[in-house]
Image (tube, rainbow, N blue to C red; front, top):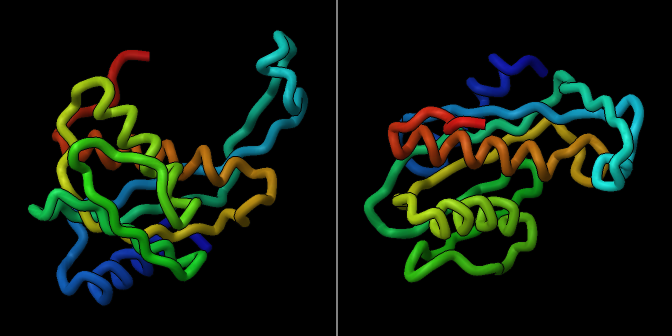
Length: 153
């Protein structure tokens, strides 16, 4: 499925779930390692490469101080509070999003409530970095909500 088709599908799903249009659409690709699986943290060489499979998040801000995530791929919804700080919780896949939010909170960056739909063409647990793609897409979304671009590398 093309990224454009995914974006249209996610935007439509967001409208059905939340009764309004999504303000933001963010995506992150999966990846494969051509060489170097599990050697990057052992001082070895790696050659990762992005692939044409994605995690896409359609979202809009809310004023509830909560995050509501509907994961269409898994068919589950998670809702959690941003106050006083985000903690681990259920369902377990939401901890990737929670972890990114907690990182922003530790850096004292303001994180506002939002509603989101997550679409994916990456197989869960397929070795294509679906969890990393979800984390990158979440960080990109939080920057968009805050009106910021990516920070320095």
